[in-house]
Length: 79
Image (cartoon, rainbow, N blue to C red; front, side, top):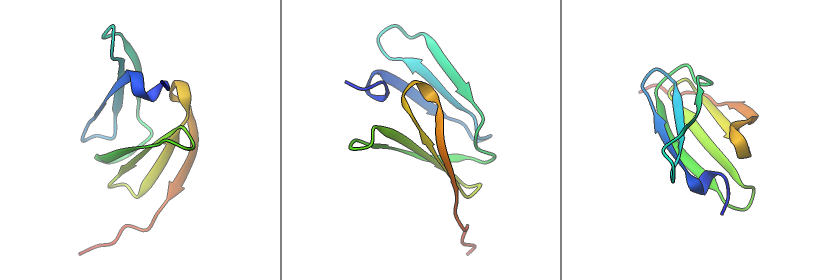
């Protein structure tokens, strides 16, 4: 199991993400890397990365332990 598979994540509308250890309920990390509503999380198995995206146009790649590996700015399409 990887670090991401043993943790619980919560996304908030203000860009804050909170992480807890699943087995103990211990709060592990609070991060505000995004500046908008975090809309999705995806785990990339092969690379062992967690990807988060938000309506601020950023994709953040997270490594084990909650460290930021990369940030990617994408164009936000307006309706």
